[in-house]
Image 1 (cartoon, rainbow, N blue to C red):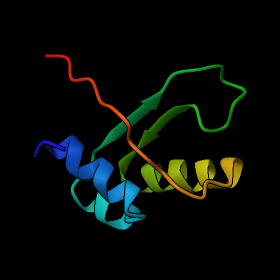
Image 2 (tube, helix red, strand yellow; image 1 turned 60 degrees about the vertical axis):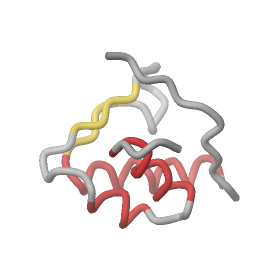
Image 3 (cartoon, rainbow, N blue to C red; image 1 turned 90 degrees about the vertical axis):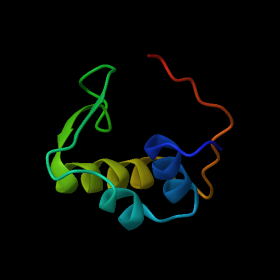
Amino acid sequence: MSDTIIDHFFQCVVDGGIVGAIKIMTDDVKLEVQAPSNVSIYGKFHGHDGVRKFFATLRELLNTEAVAVRSMLAID
């Protein structure tokens, strides 16, 4: 991976380090996942607590054993 903050974030997630991933975010981080409102992992998540909630819900719903980033697209 190249050396961007997004790359660092996803590497932390892949390595199982949500705590590490959150540490590189500002306190006012906003995460928005778009999809139908009746799906609990979709919506707006604010701040570190919101990001923790998103990943905890994702983990509960998907029972994920591993995370792999196969490709990324950056748009300027």
